[in-house]
Length: 79
Image 1 (cartoon, rainbow, N blue to C red):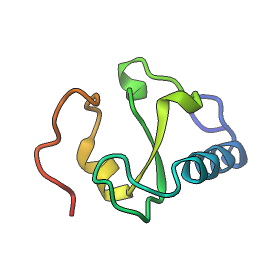
Image 2 (image 1 turned 90 degrees about the vertical axis):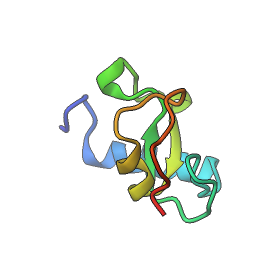
Image 3 (image 1 turned 30 degrees about the horizontal axis):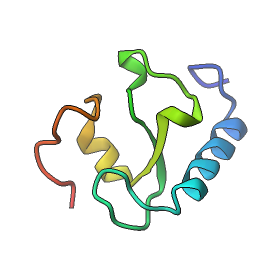
């Protein structure tokens, strides 16, 4: 199991569910083509793996955001 109690298969199904729900649109930059599920409240700040805490994001937008909460601005767009 991965850290956080999810197996690889469970994490993949959750990511696909989030991408489908959000129609593949990145919540950070608003562009289509998102390929990851991002925690709105990062796990390092007490966030959970619940669907309501996950949103579709591009890997580079997700990485650029780091562990900031949605209220903390991102220094620059990843694109």
